[in-house]
Structures are given as C-alpha cells and as structure tokens.
Image (cartoon, rainbow, N blue to C red; front, top):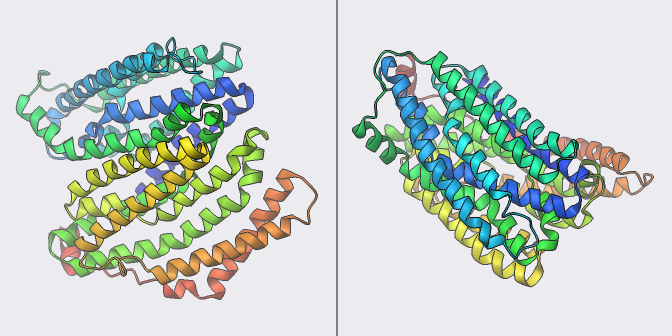
Length: 485
C-alpha cells in the first residue's frame, strides 16, 4: 500500500513541478506586463478546472468498485458527460468575466474565449487518472499526471519561446486540451469493455450527483480560494500582480506528503471510526501528525531563510519585492501537518469539510480586500495567513470532537513548539553563516541550505525529538481480521 501511495504521489509531485516550471520559464522570458496577464489567466484556468470538476472525477474510485465490470464504460461515459456539462458552465462563466476586465491593464477580453474553449475540452477528461487508479493501473495514473504536466508546459511555453506571445500560449493550451481529450477517449476504449448499450441511467446520475455534492462544494470553494488572492491583487494592486503570483507559490511536496500519509492510514482510520474505536483513531492521527511536524517545521523555516536567494536563482533576479510576501506565504506550510480532510471524511463529518472551505474563502476575500486596499500585495499575504490560521483551528476543533479529544491535546503542541523553535534557530544561524560568503546567490543558497539542514537534523537528534514521537499503534484485531478476509 505504501509503495502504491508513493508512486501516485510521485505523479502528483511531477504535475506540480510542471506548473512551477511554467512559472519559472515565463517569468524569465516575458515582460512584467505580459507575465502579469499570463499569471492572471493561469489562475482563472486553475480555478475553472476545479469548478468544472466538482468532485465528479473522484466518484469514479467509489462507483467503479461497486458496479459490474460490464457497466464500467457506461459509467465512465456518464461521468464524462456530466463533466462536459460542468465544464460548459465554467467556460460560460469565463466568457462573462471578460467585460469585468475591459478597463483593466490586462488584455483579457480577447484571450478569454480561447481559455473557455480549453476548459470545455479539458474538463471531460479529468477522470482519466482516477479511472486508471480504479482499474488498478497505479503506474499508469502517475504517468498520466506526469506526462500531462510536461505536455501542458510545452504547449504553453513553446509558442511564447517561438515569439507567438501570450495569444500563442492560449492556442497552445487549446492544443493541449485537444490532445488530452483524444488520449482520454482512447484510454476509455482500451480500459473498458463494450458489453452493453450506452445510455444514461437517471437513477445512477441522481445517486452520483448526491454522492459528490458535499465534496463538490468543498472543491468549488477550494478552487476559488487558490486564485482569489491574485484576483484581489489584480483589482487593487495590479502593478504587483506578477510579483504576488510568484510570492503565492508554495513548495508542493509538503501538502502532498501530508495527503499521502493520510492515504496510507485511510483504511485504518475508516475502520476505527466505523467500529467505534475512537482511541485507536486518535492514536493513528497523533502518530501521523507528530512525524509530519518534524518535516513541516524544517521545510517551512528552510523556505523562509532561503527565500531571497531561491527566488533570485529560480526567477533570474526579477521581482525582488516578492521575497517578503513569499516568506509570509511560506508560513502557510506550518498547518500542513496532516490530511485534515481525509480524517474528517473517515469520521463521516463531510459537512465540516465544505463549511471549512467556504469559511476560508470568505475570510480570504474579506480580509484580503481590506488589507490589499490598505497595504497592497503584502496585506494580501498577511490576510491569507490569518484566514488560514482561523480555518485550521476550525478543522482541528472538528477533528478533536470526532476523536474525543480537546483542542489542547489534538496536536502534540509541545513537540510542535520545540520543532519550530529549533528550525527558526537553525535558520537564523544559517543566514548569519551565509553573510561571510562572497555575494553570490547560488553560493549563499548552498551555504544556507547546507548549514540549515545540518543544524536542524543535528538538533532534532540532539534534543531527542524522535523519542517524543507517539508510537504508531498496532492494528486492532478487528482490522487485521477484516484485512485477512
């Protein structure tokens, strides 16, 4: 199970790296005004993909394991048609967004129709990696994510490198979506059998929509939340949108690690909650959280201390004003100590998930508009951090309730404080050590990274933090019996 989870995680990491690579290349080759326009377009694209999905792709994992194999093609086609409908809604919304930006400094009205077409073509294919997972093709699922990310990177950056500008990038995105749609059709034909006439089952459609609705609400809010900071900055501090798009970039490995850890424990958590083994569920949670704390504290402090050199190396020295907002946004990683959503789903508390998602979206919008109007993009970064803190405490309170704990005990706060303090101390010492080196961004980055990692790892073992980790509990006898069966 661990190997399969890591393989799927690798595909997700490569997909995130592909998106990061697009930003790195485009920042280097585009003028600031062009990069700001592309950053805004990509934020709308990412949100539209999420809005178009609405949890429907994830339903493939649930339903394909419960229906006869002869009905798999029918259900995949049904899901794709539903996605085509939600994709059409997302594309229509994009077309109506155009006039809003008519008087803005961004040349969007003539570009958004091409973006809408790309969304219309891509959304029906969102179930491809989940279909491969449902058919036990874990490597294929990881490969799909990785190849799709690479192809998208080539299709977006290639036309710009050839001198076709931002419009060429939109043409490339449409070409990418078209190739993806063709590949998805071929994949569906090869993985599923034609054993029954293709027709929509209204009862099945209603059941699928009812099943995905709570998750869809969460995904809708989360998708809007990923772009709302950029949209607010575009509206009230448009000159710094390009810099904020860089600042809002987070290291993708940490969230994916937390999700992967949750995936490894998912069946055990579900079993524990289903059988009323609340102490067992809490023990699983604390064991996973404590181990992620050591990773999260180190990565967060490392990103903060290395930010000036890291951004200079990655983005060619452009947008130095993005350093401080990037450091503030990097602090968001401190709450990525667990798969909070997976735990609440295991406990059957899905309403708290969509409530939390809409809570953070509302807070981000409210705090963000006020803070950005007063302090520009720096205010948006601080507003995002504050909104995330409130959102995190809300999630922890719900998890505490589900596991019979208190907010004071649902996280090993003592271990958390020690790890963060140790990481901060190591970061300060690493920054001081780099001051003695010649003024070279690469050299400073290497020195900071080497000194920080050495001090943090030595400190973790010197302070005996591994000994403070809660033991991973043995599986309950009922779980072992079910697994054996």
